[in-house]
Length: 319
Ligand SMILES: Nc1nc2c(c(=O)[nH]1)N[C@H]1C(S)=C(S)[C@@H](COP(=O)(O)O)O[C@H]1N2
Ligand SMILES: [Mo]
Image (tube, rainbow, N blue to C red; front, side, top):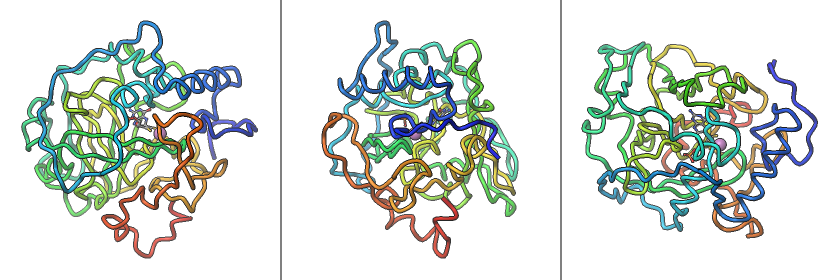
């Protein structure tokens, strides 16, 4: 059972992830969202949009998309990072005070060689490549983003998962001083996400350090996040501090809040609607609020690469 009461809101498509919010807060967010969409990147006064250092990356032609990229401004000013608040511009507004150095990533659990890595060593572990990935949020908006990093499998191979490592859990950072959103107690912090081991080892699953040829801005998950482009955006945890290999499936944050609405797999699937809204189409951020919606693709367009991972599974049951 969900720990949160879900209010009977009809036009939930605008802020579906905010169902548990009080009605007042919900209305505030709808207002803010509408402004952001209309203006194509509404920057609040005093927004901390500091430019980050360059991060040289070699384009990888295996992960190239011909789609028009979402503007850097939209990618860095319209997103979700609930630790900083539930509004789409809250991450940009508040994430500037998050401390990203020193930063240690600990890998533990079902591995032969558990250890901690300094973030600057992780940056040197493999050559940094640029990959253009689609992002499809469960809220039915989408972006096309050039991330910089390398496959997560490169890191996992270093610690040698044991035969009992069936799942990978990502634990993200908690910095009470810097994160006003923690007071909301929407989520039992830290934000936790997870993958099955074969999903985590898939070459598409990317460890990300940069975007648009620069180090990640805080609001996009500095200093290190993952990007899993065939799954809804919430699967891609930001600002990761711990990677735990496990024998059992972790209870991930959104599954813990509303398991009837958010599944562990969360593969992009236009044929399986969210209980309260359709997933059949999406709005491309930057196209303007009145632009025609585009059809959502099975596995967000990555079916050739990943469909075999789910052969024989009932995708309506394992959503
Ligand atoms: N730690 C943390 N990671 C998170 C979230 C969050 O609230 N906290 N939101 C998720 C959601 S819902 C989305 S759509 C993406 C959006 O961020 P991006 O545009 O930088 O990918 O981050 C995901 N990762
Ligand atoms: Mo999302």
